[in-house]
Image (tube, rainbow, N blue to C red):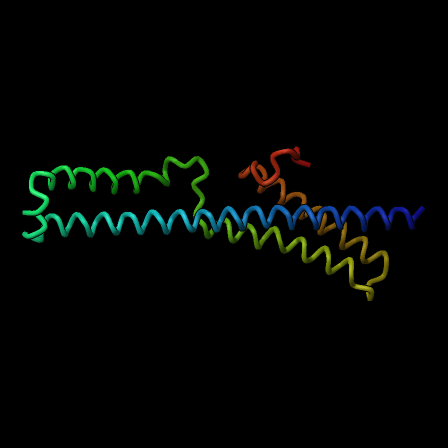
Length: 159
């Protein structure tokens, strides 16, 4: 009976480790996308701001644009305002660094579980005790992440 329990514990730990790995990858990808979106918004804001300064203060450009300068200034102002409001309108307004931190945090459990599973120097009782503790911590933290970001496992209920 103990062999079955040990085998079941190993299998469960492998499942939890795989789950942590999947979730960490999803969080990391979301973080990369958030970083790219933030960079794009900053580049657009800088280009619009520089263009507005050029139109406003370079007489040749102002003369060339003529009456459209006031429309351009209005469009630039609206673009800059919307660019600054965009992060607040995002329901999942997490900075890219937060995603990276949580991805590393959850991925730690994957690595730790696999390390315990592969450590042949541990007695069976010690291995099972460590697996039980790390499994519990992993599940608690995965559920915490799921409560913040349900998209990490949309088809899985919290365990």
